[in-house]
Length: 225
Ligand SMILES: Nc1ncnc2c1ncn2[C@@H]1O[C@H](COP(=O)(O)OP(=O)(O)O)[C@@H](O)[C@H]1O
Ligand SMILES: [Mg+2]
Image (cartoon, rainbow, N blue to C red):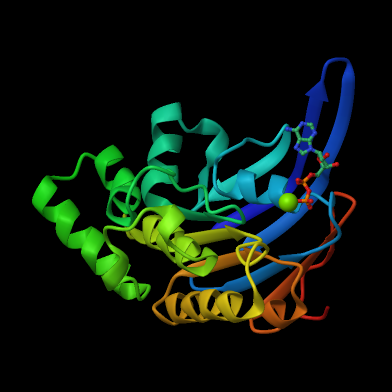
C-alpha cells in the first residue's frame, strides 16, 4: 500500500543544501504495524512527512495504493491528508482554546460532513480512546496522556487506513505512554496500518517490524534492532 523507491529529500536553506533522505526504499503492506527508529537527525520525521503527503520527495518515486503521488493534484493530496492518513505528533498539536469535542471535529468539518454525523462520530472516537468524560474539556484541563488521546481521536475521525505517529510518547511519562501504545495496538488489531517513530525500545519491540534509519538511509528493514 505504501511503496517508496530510492526516495531522496534535499532541503535548501538559502544557499545551503542538505540531503536528509539519500535514497530510501521502504514498503508497508495494509495492516502492518511498523516502528521507525534511528538517531536524531537520521531523517525519520522527513520520511513520515513524505509518507503522509505533507511533503514531497525531491527524487525517487512514491506510490500510495499503486498510484504515483507525484501525479496527484493538490486537492487529491489534501484529501489523502484528511481522509486516508491520521497524524499523531509528539507535541499533540491541539487547538489550545478548543474543547476535546471541537478539536476532534476539525477534520470532519474539513471533510464537509453534516452536523449530526459529526457529533455522533466525535463522541464515538472520544469514547474509543477512553475520553467520554472529557468531551468538553480544553487541553489545559487535560493531562499529557489525555491530550495525546484527543489527538489520536482527531486522527481517527475520518476513518483513515493509515496512522502515522511521530514520537507520540516523547512528551509523556511511561504510564501515559503505555496507554497510548495500547491504543495503537488495539487500532492495529482493527486493521489499521500503523507506523510509529520512536526512541523507545519497549514500543519498537511491540511492533511487527522495526525499520532502522541512519544518515538518511534505511540501515535495516527487518525486525532486528
Ligand atoms: N525544513 C527543513 N529545512 C532544512 N533542514 C531540515 C528541515 N527539516 C529537517 N531538516 C534536517 O534534515 C535532517 C533530518 O531531519 P528529521 O527528518 O527531522 O530527522 P529525525 O526526525 O530523524 O530527527 C536534520 O539534519 C534536519 O536538521
Ligand atoms: Mg523527528
